[in-house]
Amino acid sequence: MKPIWIVDDDQSIRFVLEKALLREDLPTRSFTSPREVLAALENATEEDGPQILVSDIRMPGGSGLDLLEKVKEKLPGLPVIIMTAFSDLDSAVSAFQGGAFEYLPKPFDLPKAVELIRRAVEESQREEVAEERMASAPEMLGQAPAMQDVFRAIGRLSQSMVTVMITGESGSGKELVARALHKHSPRASGPFVAINTAAIPKDLLESELFGHERGAFTGAQTMRRGRFEQAEGGTLFLDEIGDMPFDLQTRLLRVLSDGHFYRVGGHNAVKANVRVIAATHQDLEQRVKEGGFREDLFHRLNVIRLRLPALRERREDVFMLTRHFLQQSAKQLGVEPKRISDTALQLLSNFGFPGNVRQLENICHWLTVMAPAQVIEPKDLPPEVLGMIPEPGKPLAAAEKSDAVRTEWAASSDKVLPGPAPEAALPVVAGVGQNWESGLEAEALALLATGRSDVWDVLTRRFESKLIQTALANTRGRRIEAAQKLGIGRNTITRKIQELHLE
Image 1 (cartoon, rainbow, N blue to C red):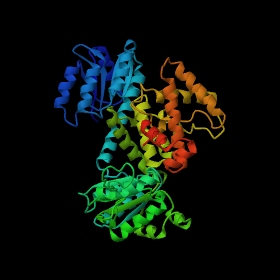
Image 2 (cartoon, rainbow, N blue to C red):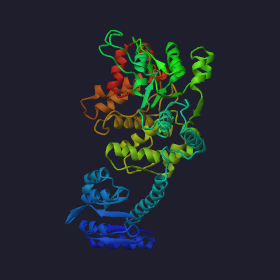
Image 3 (tube, rainbow, N blue to C red):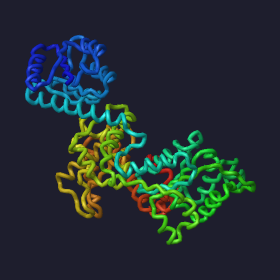
Image 4 (cartoon, helix red, strand yellow):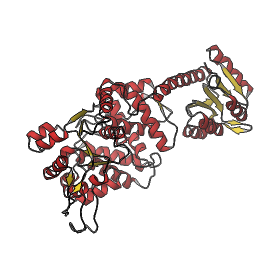
């Protein structure tokens, strides 16, 4: 096992820690200054490098925080424990922001110090194994048998030009599969163009798909190429094809049949050299029976069907995906990646994930921002994972409500969250029905007590976000219908979606 490096200018501290760790069969190596540590790192091999670094915060010739920053540049995954006096607790906050594993206040209780170091060692060893697994991870993450079937299908279709229909629940990664099909196809050098047919108003969708000629309608000042032309020589991904208006289904069928289309207002046929991949979360066979989807178009699109499993059907992939998204979120936010304990991971893998992989990604982003320490414990998981969201009409107990309010306030603080809070950061703090008003009152009181001057904006943005998201979920993403149900205009809901970053 690699040694634990201890750096402190106080010889007594070094001596006590060395003896205590040796009794636990943990090898050590001691230094008196950050300069010595950095010099040793330059010459260290992979075998004799540090397993853990335990560093004082104030030393002659250098700061423990500066050392932390430099060590993290060289060894980003190395757990670092910062020792600090009680008067230096402000520095401990800086230590966490710099990626420290934990801080150890002086004077410390020796058994607790050893326990903390032992925990850091176990975490380090677990991370080493995990990194080896991640290094051999495939382009698309998933070891479950259901995902392996998807990978095999992508491989078989790699040299084919056949039309593919991808089915699966919302958030399960259908566009990712479509991109993989394109990347491994003979058209990989061409463009990949995606369009969500449910997110574009019916009167604009035809122009989006096929383009328009100048003067085709009011506001058409110039000729515009549609998505079919933009995808020339490549792949066009039609997401949520089940929501395409019936009259446009006829035009799409014609393109798939003879390979030609007309721009809106045009008279000359345009040849389409495009591979079409479609996706839907709906039961298209049922839509055909109900008369909402053309049967001939269904058979034209459904040449090869790929079913993408829900995340609850591939729980063994939650670990790999969680690590991936925690790394991804940390990179986006410019912070040290968080680790997750086995207990917390077990709780997370038992969650139902109604939003599938997209929901897990949101949760990991929330944890990157909100988890207080570098290691995520069960208590750090969001309320929906811990089962804190109440039954409809059933309010939270007083203690639970207080915790939920504190969680909500933290999630809403612009000092904590750099940008809009992800969906997972909006847990319910009270039951539906009349109880939502008391929940709002508690939220407002909690925010007002902090002395903030933007309470109106914070609560209004969260209220509007939740209202629009709920309406869109109710209408399966159809904006015009959602706007009608909310009693607002189409332009209003489009503007709000952009302002609130709900795309």
